[in-house]
Image (spheres, rainbow, N blue to C red):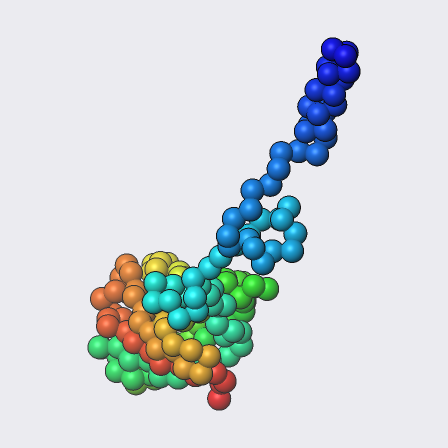
Length: 175
């Protein structure tokens, strides 16, 4: 009889290991069909504590030619042209991206290749221009949307004494 008792006890322990521990039922799980799965809960849609998910906005699609007006303190009003070339994810301005600033009244200009970045609300760029062996750094940025961008440009080096308080406004397309 003792052998039978030991066999039954071992069989009971073995069945416990084979089938696992019993699952606990919680009141919120009452409607669950499969008690082996977990459950989840979220606040109600109109809960004032709920915060909206942050949505990543794509960089502006500005590839191509944009033109408009440029203004500087000493030179007055002129014309500006940007020819943007973006990489495949539109985040960078890549080789072949160019700028051309012209002030016909003073025969002043600045032009050349540029590099930069694009985000959902505009772009930033930097370049180097050379005149008679003198290098000047050019940096600028603009904000807006796919229909109009407005921005500023800063010149460094000797150019900073000539091109001051430079602003521009551009739209897609070139004359």
